[in-house]
Image (cartoon, rainbow, N blue to C red; front, side, top):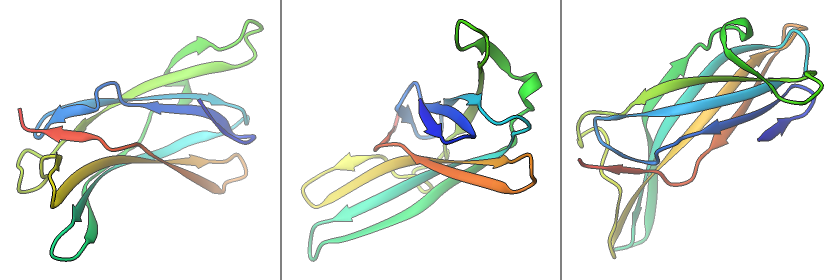
Length: 150
């Protein structure tokens, strides 16, 4: 769990990091709101593909293969579990399905050869609406994530 000071304690998890191009994977979100009146606004999930080329001269480039924007339900519509024995904090849980591109034209397979590496990363950007009306955002990148042909 990560701490967003005085706002929320949260965690984002991907149960299966090796998936096939054209398939989907579940992303699990867990949050403990610490600030009364805090609302989840949007969650953006970005699939970023990075190419590392060794020859003729080393080069790197990245591109966003997929951007998925999700508007989560309100706190009152989420699964809830007491987080502590005193029941002063509650853990809210929800999941979102991320559908990957269906073709290798849109998303290359992860690979690692002597001259070329293709890696994938998922980045999640969470936006919160604070009780005073201002917006807060925080990003969370995940390590290399494989897209394998099935």
